[in-house]
Figure 1 (tube, rainbow, N blue to C red):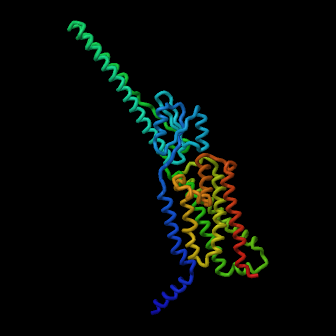
Figure 2 (tube, one colour):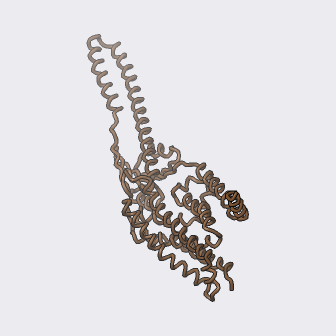
Figure 3 (cartoon, rainbow, N blue to C red):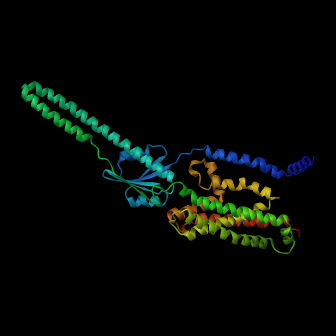
Length: 396
């Protein structure tokens, strides 16, 4: 009976807590719907290939392949500039019967798609050439046979036989020469990594930022919630201290821990997993520190809306899970436009793009003004909301 009594008391408390009930039942449904919208969209990979001095037939064949766009360039330097500006994913340059392919290789999926498209286009072009050569040789053979028949009627049997043998040998040699094809030599070059670089290389910078965001968000939110539930925050708010001073004080204190944690995560990820960093390690750390401060402000803000650690944990599916979906782990160009628009309000997208550019392309902080600006904007907005949010707890 005591067990039943305890059960009834807990159930009554749960049913009184409308927010907990809503998070328990609505959050999973919303996440599942979001996953359905994302994964039911077109999952194909679109690639753009720049070509230099490539035959029109090969350009046409590559352009006819689905999800492949071909852009022609007059010089290889112009194509390299487009590759560095992310306008194309690979360069194909023809030199006689040989080909040189240069891949950005920042996404192994696109690299594999370009290789497959080029191989199929080259095979189709070679087959068409062989068909054309075979057709010409067949036509020549028919003409020669007609000439042979005319010669046989005009000359004596022995002379005609000798001439026929000589002419047939000539026809056979011509057919063989016209249908023979030289095997093209294909040379592959990679701007980032090598042929063994997989998709994990693209995921790793984003996962690095995700772990920074997740742990800072969780620790800061839980810590401030404990301050509030134990009454420490209420006593502090009862003093004449400004709300902005309280917010900045908490952010600075937890920020020191966030800085240490971020440096540990970044250095461990880069050195332990052996990721190749083209740019500056300092730049990677700076971007992740900005993300950590955004996560810190976000965690403090959401802790003001949670009445218990249980509710704080239930915010994770609504706040952290979408960060994964729209961070770049799933190619955004495969999503519908209205779903893709959600990514612009996700902090992890901007940090992921910035860190990817630094690690894979060697981009400097000066060239990442847009991404850094958006992270700073998130930080300012969330800090202001934290200051406003403390008003509900001010006792005096």
